[in-house]
Image (cartoon, rainbow, N blue to C red; front, side, top):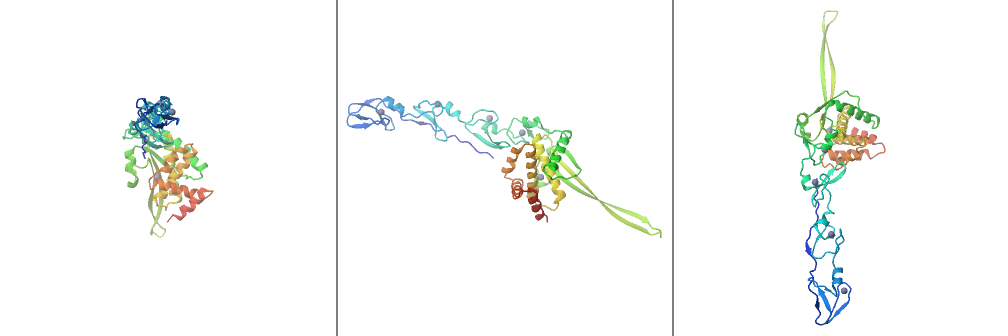
Length: 345
Ligand SMILES: [Zn+2]
Ligand SMILES: [Zn+2]
Ligand SMILES: [Zn+2]
Ligand SMILES: [Zn+2]
Ligand SMILES: [Zn+2]
């Protein structure tokens, strides 16, 4: 989402002063002090038709630069709120500062970030976006072609060895602070965007940085026994093998990793307690809601601004729907359980 900032630049000419002359006959009034100039007296006239009794009065009629306070005679610049400036140097002090290169710029783009709206100058706004924080930046390219900014790379989760203790911490917080968790033995993998894309269902391709998979394997065994009368007896048994897997894209910043992992763990929870829910908006909305709660626990509440504003009809609208269900009662989980039960067909 970009919004252009316009600074209206108007170059106009303030009344050009014509030389002092003497009034031939009649009487005129000074536009500044109101003194009457009679026949034979000196006066000044500006080209916009106003009369002045003296140079001093004419100068008083000139506008002030709203930055340096100097009287402006001749060309001036007008800001978007109508303020006047004597020069480009003065008006440029009112321009917004680019949050990347720190230069003041007349125009550019406002981009929604974790910390709120940020202004970028035109040059910086056109730089590649970081896959993790989605801000334009001086990015490095990862092996799979994704672009990542220096800030995100600082604490990026690059290996499963880095990931596992953090995942444990997220699961502990979900259990002890948020009171929803499963005891599933989940296997985790860190992978690149190509592998994640191959594994993702069509409708979610390229959208997620993580993926939860539940695979049920039914193992049928037939036991053959010969009884005491010499007759062969067959007994069939079924063993259900439940496999839980979470795939996460590598090189996410620590905070993004926490958010995405919490999102996938929420899918695991829903698979256990409400496996019949098929509505993608409920599933993804719930996962985003859980991620938002975990973000809060980790002190990353500002990351939830993205969800609140996400225009996506599944993820964004789903999140806002689940959040409003949760906020209906003083016990959010009570209303959510009721809502999930009603939607389990
Ligand atoms: Zn006057
Ligand atoms: Zn000025
Ligand atoms: Zn810039
Ligand atoms: Zn980044
Ligand atoms: Zn999801």
